[in-house]
Amino acid sequence: MHRKMRSWLTVLSILIGVMAIYAIVSFGLGIQSYMDTIAEEAGTDKIYIQPRGTGAPGTDENFFISEDEANFVSKIKGIDKTLAWYLKAGLIKYKDQQKYYFLAGIDPETDQEFLDQVFTVTVDKGRHLKKGELDKVVLGYNYQVDDRVFEKGVQLGDKVEINDVKFTVVGFYEEIGNPSDDGNIYLTFDAFEMLYPETEGKYGALIMSTLPGENPSDIADKVEDKLRKYKGEDEGKETFFVQTFEDALETFGNVINVLNGILVLIALISLVVASVNIMNTMYTAVLERTKEIGVMKAIGAKNGDILFIFIFESGFLGAVGGAIGVLFGYLIASSGGKAAAAAGYSSLYPIFPWQLTAACIAFAFFVGAIAGVLPAMQAAKQKPVDALRYE
Image 1 (cartoon, rainbow, N blue to C red):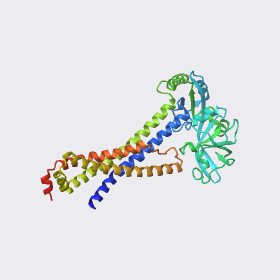
Image 2: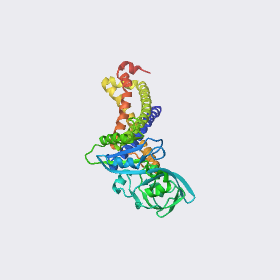
Image 3: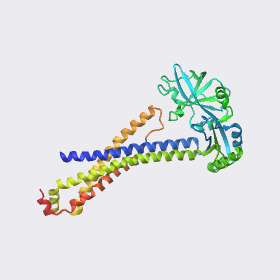
Image 4: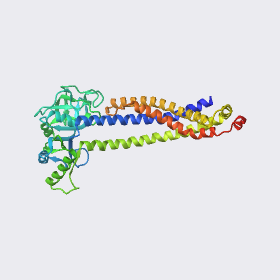
């Protein structure tokens, strides 16, 4: 009974480490899959120009992209389509509740396919905005869901107040996967300028696509150089920055990889502790089975046979802990994914490729086997006569 209890405690220590690694890596793979999907939908031919102000684009009135600058950039060789948009924080009221979210002013005359690509989303219910509409609004996905933004979800045709001006909801965008984007409010240029007349012609961001065959990084460098000269600014002191969509994804991916690496490192520490537990268990097992080792050697067992038995046993303990850890890791990650989706973070979903499952179990077996080498060597070196005489 003591031996079984000791073995299960050893399995538990391996289980915790593998469970953590499996859950963390599954979420990391899910985020990478989400980024790949976004890249495929938006296309890697996009270039962003944003002012260098503090906070989100458009929230600092001292930093903006002017209409003249947007027109200048759109004529640079290699640029295909251009989308300028406004961005401000605004107060939205629905029934007796009110919340602050971002208002995005967009030009309905922009090519709709390009617009959907830029926002990586399309209308889920209702319709798009039309040019000149001053009292219509399209809301992000979360507004139609109970307890996401308001206690009761907004319906098509409902009235909402934005900065104390009434608007009719004519559409909802499909879910993007994070509360910030899914809480955006979309208005026409005219409606936005009506709410914020001081921002007319002062855009929060400019997004462009490059012509087929052009290298977005080369075009981005050209845009930065020409816009700097157009604004009369010194290199390194620009009031704007230019970034390709691919670079933005890479930066985000690097941050995620660093975070995942730190979390996996913490989980690996628990596996190191588990390997010490396995070694301790196997040393105890060698002492408890000293006479058995003597009997096996007396009837012809070789050192290699004894070595294999103990290494396999320690590896088996690791594999059992790894298999159970994978199971619990799957349950935890699945529950975490569902909880994140319920909270509006549907982009945080785990994926479970078979390679991850196999690798975690194999790794646990390897850790166990390595931890059992020294005790196994001690067992294999014992002399039959001394082992049989051991009390």
